Image 1 (spheres, rainbow, N blue to C red):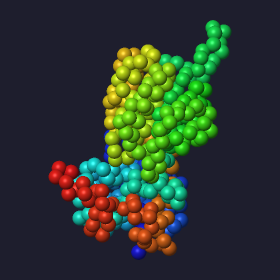
Image 2 (image 1 turned 180 degrees about the vertical axis):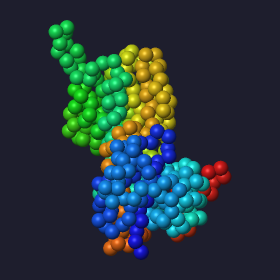
Image 3 (image 1 turned 90 degrees about the vertical axis):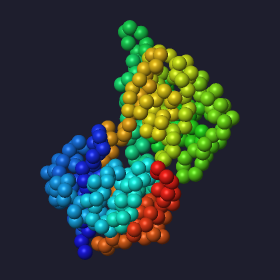
Length: 378
């Protein structure tokens, strides 16, 4: 039986990414699969229907693109109407947001869909090539600095002009995960003086290797899965006391401290913002989880006492061409675990597949989603 891979057009408002790019379509066809793309699915990422046709894919409308699919690839979760179009016992791979709108998973369960959540790919060495959270976070960290530079009324680099010398901007990056490290590297490339902060002391060396100064508050908060654990009340107070001084001195603060499925830690208080210089900028990449800044409003730029606080959403989607390319490569590497010798084989002993699988064979196999569905009002 041949394998048909289908890619619908994304329906999330403002989304510009697409799950497959023509380069990866060619690789999938070389594996013996058939690829179907919904018309105009790649337009906003820079890929035309003709580009996909040239790569060997066929173009379909919304009503039939998933009709004969063995595997469906998406960026964002499908809505309930799209789920109803999925063939029984097919495979769905994409961001599934397993922490909210869990009724979608009941619909997937009833259709016996094997649904893999890219957010749940374990952060182990073998899974790095499939880690979509990291590939997209890297883009977000890069773009956050460009957003900040655009919003700021100051140059990032030092400039010597006939009218005098312009001092470089001071940039503080809060959170030194993938997004934070990319933000540090980008701010340094633009010539800013950069400081990096993270509650995980182990990242100090990485921050300094990029040319930034590490803000050390002598708290060790390494957690599981590469994320930081929650701070105690005493640790949080110490963090705020020390960070307040660095935030007040910064021209730009970029916040990146977020953990999927949990509220973003509140790090910057209103009082800290009010102590910043007029014209300063905060770009809060943790806005989707409520924000690292107390004043952050998701999807909005606000000005509070002459300080701009930006809460952008879906930042990787604003760099759609390369974001789609990296995400498609993540999906291809994921598919390499599932497609063996021209056939579909889901190895439930494989940690990557096991950890990322939400529904399978008529069951909800992810304990967290199963528990949330049992709660009233979930």
